Length: 517
Image (tube, rainbow, N blue to C red; front, top):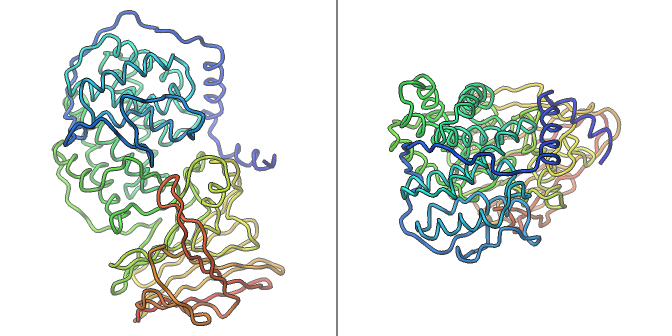
């Protein structure tokens, strides 16, 4: 890691992030965890729990590509990546197993994971796990002092490790968890903090259009799911006291639903920025959950200013026009400015590489790079200083954005490099025009990543896809090669990547035509 990357990352942080990083470190290293509550009161709370209804009880479940038996869970394993273990400790599988098996697994977790254990007691897994446990207890009307004692201990531990050092989706998970715990145990401190912070984060984490500000379709889905859970518990337990807040949450849910469907194409969420499909319900299931909670939703046609779509006959094209966001933690952003996706009714044509994992490895570096996206790479460089698994130092800034019915324009500038892309609708398809300015002599690579399922043939600088669509590329050196694609976490397949290579002095303009045959 270059020291300058570290410094350039810190300058974007909020003071509260630095303060809480120190505070959490002190808590983890000098606080000896024990059960802080020997006595507690449990409130009889009400939940709809519609998302917890499963068609059948099973004794096996899956985490990513691995099938596990409920009787044989190993909570800590050096052979599994951290994200895999996180999902294990979330307990999302509780909705699919019986009361008896569920209680046994929870007891086993309590016995095998002492307070303060790594991964098991990280604040993010705690936040998801305690909500799943509470829903499970309510669904089967379980009264277990052992589980309640563990829950209140996890709540105490979580409250002292609220993820202010990260903010974003992590802090929002903390809010949901502490609200559930606070209501369950009638802990006013936890409830008051959750309500106060919820109001702040509803303003902070949702764009004016209504989608989550980290610009990932799957993280947006998780955010909407959290809103539904918040609506459920507040509406059922405090319908008068928090009437206005409940109404606000309902509105946010309705707007959020529109974008769930916007980013769900050909039965899959678009792989924009970091995406994690594990355990994500389809939009129609989310809509049913909302309707069962009494939220009436009707689909509205939208077009995003950050990911605008242009349609022509049977084709749709999308351009990435979103900044590295939020500025103080753009950990799920990729170097993908001005990248494009293209699809037809038959399926995806131009795709995104996706992301293989969150480990700091070659797969992760490639997935975040500009070369993994259908954009222009100048001198082999990215659009930001990427380092570690999630860190970003200096980054490109968007300068211009115009979104019209027949033309989309977006440009950015980064370290004296300027790139503008125009997409223009034509009678037979789309024209792409890339304008690059960078003083001196430089090299460029124009990337197009094709969905693996497509067939195509090349004729000089012309590509014919599925015998239906023709790409007329700039008349320069053309390279066609296999590159990695990650349809899901920890899955790798090969896709065809087409690269147009050339050199320029000071500035260059590249033109690509995409025509329907």
